[in-house]
Length: 346
Length: 148
Image 1 (cartoon, chains in turn purple, yellow):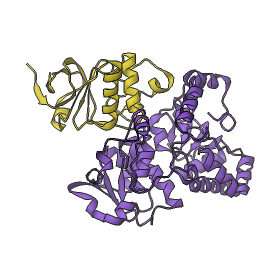
Image 2: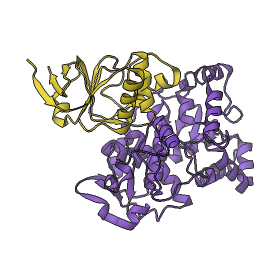
Image 3: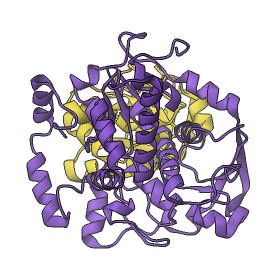
Image 4: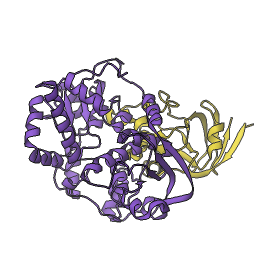
């Protein structure tokens, strides 16, 4: 929990204390096992600011479905989808079973995903479509090098979110993106096994999937009470982008306070870097009332009492596991500024 | 006499029979049991709102028939928790091969808690097309499944 930047009521805190009543013991145990500090908690623990970025070809034994997906796909490291617990056992032992995504054969694609959208698709929507279709299979994605030229500070956030959505809507541990991800850049379509299946994703297909998402709010037409951005935790690039977007929108609207409590989630390290590199933006965000908490938005939404709130989010992963509703960035921006959803949003 | 018989691979062998709960959508273990994980709920009712086949169904003691499991790496922990609470399915029958997360959780529960979810995989799409929610299903030690 981050009670400073995501304050909770006494009732909400009591619910959390009851569930996580052994958190201190767990933290002490993790410190003994090698965690450097209690600032280290983050689902995006491979980001440069965390100091734990694997290299291509590194053998790992990781859990956290979004992290597994990112390091396999965007960095070319090698880990299977390990469960919580098994990862710890492997890491203590220093060994992991060599199979699946740790092998050349296991990293071959059996799906060709042809992206034929008219513009860069939202990563969480594209990831949702892919995850729902391929489930666990490795896919080779084409059509994205129109928009993305490689893995860099800007694209890493996009690839992270795409992968997280494939791993929560499906069970994807690895995707290759033609012209973008390292193995695809080197091997191209040699990564496709004979007899692969093809899935075409266009604007209509993404629209179909978006419309299939259920509205689980008790008050279906209710006004969101919070906006949660960043699940998995934001990269520095994403935090900067959203920070500037909110500032720009608020200045255009002539507003000095946001219309709905808004939270940008990231690790302490990324937050520190963001605040250091963008002091003017941060000052404005603070003035508007935007918070940057370090906790997990998905777990927060899953906690009783907290889970009853109407939360709007840009994360498909949060949508999968909670009652939070997924909206696109322009809708969320308008909501943040005005406190209301656009009238044309169902 | 069974209306159909299928043969799979007994990943965790056993003989059980019960009522089928069938999904053609990937079984998201974390989303299904998120209340169990976070708030300690004792209910085996599926909470996964994306799974229109199983949402709201009580899976405790049932024979769950699915393509495979998907979603969070907390799945293995969840299998152990639902076994410990006595709200686990009686059996998990996979059309595809079992995935690493389900395998870990079911095996850890079996070895460390001494509680078993009988598990058979590689049953094929024909199995999932044939079995319907509510069907009587018999699972045999050698991975033979009788439906109906």
